[in-house]
View (tube, helix red, strand yellow):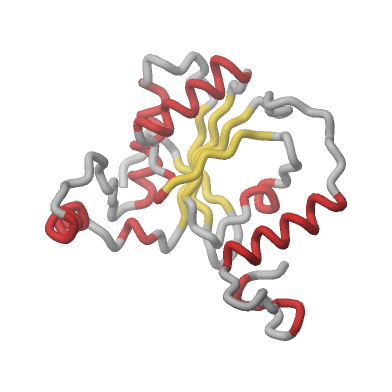
Length: 185
């Protein structure tokens, strides 16, 4: 596995004069597209599953879950928290594109464990406008997974809420630990 920490520093990693990280990504896309073959699939996930996970760069969901292109819908945000926008995406995933299962993945060492709602106040002081969204910070990752599972299970917009499971991914071992929705921390 190549990570940004192990990207070569020689001519392989050289960017055009004045190049940016985005330029590097666009160049990588050109190489990808040169070998790309249309797989002929549509937007309906083959496994009929939607995975909601944290945006943390240490989570390689497809590798960690043994997924292939087209297997699932992947919805990511800070913390992997089930917010209104996640419910929006899950509703479209289920009602328009046929998913039936929901897998929630939080992880150890999440940055949201170090923030508070004070973050919103600080932003308001800096930019003069309070964000409309909540930070959704948490101290107990297991309890936050339970809360996210409950939000999915009780949403009136979702039609498939019987197969909702939550996990914590250990960033040191790569293992998932399932969270019992009825247990209390």
